[in-house]
Structures are given as structure tokens and as C-alpha cells.
Amino acid sequence: AAKRQRERDPHLESIMADPEADGWERTDFPIVCEDCLGPNPYIRMQREDYAAECAISSRPFTVFRWRPGNEARYKKTVVCREIALAKNVCQVCLLDLDYGIPVQARDAVLGKERDMIAKSDVNIEYQTNQIAKRLEEGDEVAIRDQNAAVGKVRANELLQKMARKKPYYNKNKSPICTFWLRNACKRADCPYRPCNGDTNMPELTSAPELRQQNIKDRYYGINDPVANKMLARANEQTQELTPPDDASITTLYVGGIDDRVDENALKDAFYQYGQISSVRTVYAKNCAFVTFVDRAGAEKAASECGSRKAINGVNAKIMWGKSRKERGGGGGGG
Image (cartoon, rainbow, N blue to C red):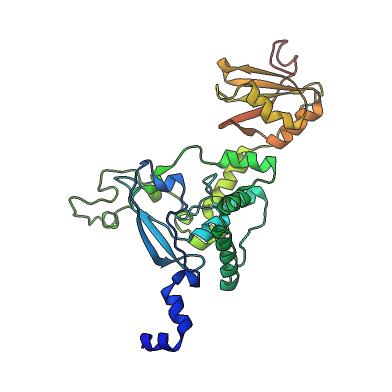
């Protein structure tokens, strides 16, 4: 019957002979984050063309499957390449490629409109085709730069605070043994936790809502419990600094630093708020003092930074300096 149908419809036969003519994706390498790739720089991937439908666009795409480590579970791509590039996310975990945080948290900080808010099949197909066309023209770098662009300095600072500082490979661990949960696992070589010896199972103590995430909600950045938790924690950590009554104080205290934060790094971090009079580092106490020429510059820096600021990978603590009277006449800025 299928043969007779193809004979009656030459166009259908041409599509079946060339799946890419129908918009099916075929690629040689996935777009994934460092966490999902794992610590081993030499991994073997299985590739199968048109093996599954994209979880967002429903178009067939090339599926990649690999094992990030000896004790890790197998990972595989769940969305197609164009869909991942549209949001600048990993094809596996759907987290932002640059900061390693959920889409909802990233977009909330940036304060930008979601690029793909329409969920109808027609609109998704149109947007996916537009990205595919740009990819054919070799415009992948431009697409990533466009989606990863940060519009405001304040947003960039908050993103740096929320961003994961180092790879998190624990999410690649093997699943928890369901037979063990029922106290019925009798396998001597069970590869799942905790039967394999790995008793670290934070999933069992996490909030129930964190274990019930919808893949489409995570991609579109709506109703994501992990993002809501991250945003709430970031708001708690970043508190507003009340300017002191003494108008002569123009110094900010920068604490919790190390040798990664030198005077040049401090100048680069604070010059945008106003003209700097002096910068003094005290590594023995892991702190520094940034003094502005006028009070307006200090107040702008305190207002923009809040109580925390990311400087060269260090989440530094920001406070107002003390007056000479409060310091007992010693050094420290004021």
C-alpha cells in the first residue's frame, strides 16, 4: 500500500528519499554543556539519525547517546539543535550554556522577553526553520552571541553570582534503584544507587516540587521550581546598602577576596560607577577598600552592587566604609 501511494505521489517519494527536505535534522555533533559531557575528555558517542522527535518542535532529529563516566548513567539529547540554539541551552539538561542556570532564572535576571513564547506548532516550526536557515549559512556563532547577550551591567553581575563556578558532575550519577526503594533488590551487581556503593542520594531529601519538572516548562522558562528557588536565594543574598549619615564617607569595603582580586581588577569592577580616588588591598584580612572621589560615585556603586559583587570569579561582600571616628582614627577608608 505504501509503495502504491508513493507511485501516485512523486512528491511524497522525494520527501521520503530525502528526509532533510521535510525539515528533519541531521548533524554530526550535539550542543551540550560541560556538565553533561563529564570529566573524561575522550568519550564515545552513539549517533542515530532521525531516532526521535524533538520534545519541543516534534521534528525528527539526530539523537546522541553517551556515558559521561564509568559510574554515570547514559545521557542523550532530547531537543533538536535549532531548538537548543534558540534559547542558548544544552540539548540534554536544557540549562543555559554560559551560566549553567535554568532559562527562567536567566531571563528573569536579564529582564528580557522570551524569544519563543508561542507554543503553536506553526509558530514553532517557522522559528525553527529560520534558525536552521541561518545555520546553513554558517551563522551559529552569531545566534549564540545574540541569545547570550547581556543587556545591563546589573544583570550581568547577578548572573555571575548565580552562575555555577565549576562543573557539577553529580547530576550524571546513576539513578536510584527502584527495587531498593521497595527493599526488594537482590542483584549482586546492581549498577544503581545505593546498591553500587554510592550512598549520596540528595534526591530523597529534596523538596517534592523539585522532582516534578516539566521539560517544556523548563525550556520556555515558566513554572520552573528550580529557577524559583535560585531567584529567591539570590534576592536574599543581595541586600540593599543604606548610605551612612556621614556624607564624608566615600569608601566601600570589599571583603572575602583573595589574590585573584588585585587593584587592577577592583578598578575595572568599580570605575563604571564614578571616578576612583584610591584602591587599597589587605590580603592578610582578605579585604580591600575602594575610595571614590565624591559621594555620588560611592552611592551609585553601593546601589548597583548591593551587598555582593562578582569580581574575577570571587563573590565579594560589599559594605560601606567607616568614618575616622568609628575607626578610632586608624586606616580603612572613609
